[in-house]
Image (tube, rainbow, N blue to C red; front, side, top):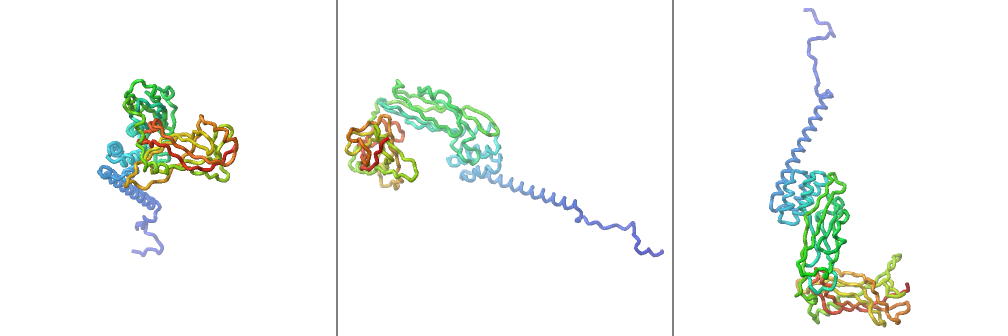
Length: 400
């Protein structure tokens, strides 16, 4: 066989191929890595979701664990609804409601589920007494707060501004509140008064809140009427108005006397001064405030009267209701005192001619008990029966 010429190619010899150097091999590798990482993350997420949802079925589940279930979308929806309505712990029920509100804001709930949550969590709080004396001689204030208590103005999730509420009150014999109010975002709040003389019988009488809610700025737009929530009260002819007054006690009289004082109002530079009318052309510039200790042996339900040194008569300064508590050795230390403004009323009595010019004067405040006033606040239990007088404080009297 003749020798093969130098530099000649063997057409039949296989040529080597480097698969790793080809571009499409790198693309395939990257795609495979993405699929592997993505699938692994999905598996890890699914495992974490199963563990989180399993924790929801435990009787000792914590509120934090309940709220964390919102991270896994609709996976824990059934358990969250169950906890929101059936959990024995109030913090756990609230946490489940907050988790559902987060899912609602992320558009994870359908309209029927949103409405179901609204109906289940709808809460109404009536502020009034169940029983009043038949001989009560003043209007009775009643306040109703309603809505979804787990919603906050700043979230997380759904906020109070995403729901608009309207309402009407039946049974109060007031035309103004029997008409439905305009829809208003935020928590529902309505205050009104009833007149005892408007109710001829002793009762029981029935008030009812009829509320309606609609969504604002959400994907699902709907409006529903909520269940009517009643409130029953009655007038008791055997219940005396004066039964709210406590028995006078010398030791507690001293405590009450030292619990109320006047604090001179410091005028800040550049601030707008406040004025209290004395009648006629004279006014008090920056009137002092009433300071009431937080540790009272009895409640205050008193009218505020102002006395001016050297001047006959008293000037009305509004009313004061402060909830006290009995003094016992096991009571915690008292908190910070409360401050109350003197309030000018439309029936201000002009002092006599002894007060006819401006200048420095001394005033004090006299508190007189009014059991009728005490019945208007459901938290008042025992009104101090005596008068309470503060020390004298200097004020500036100016002309209007």
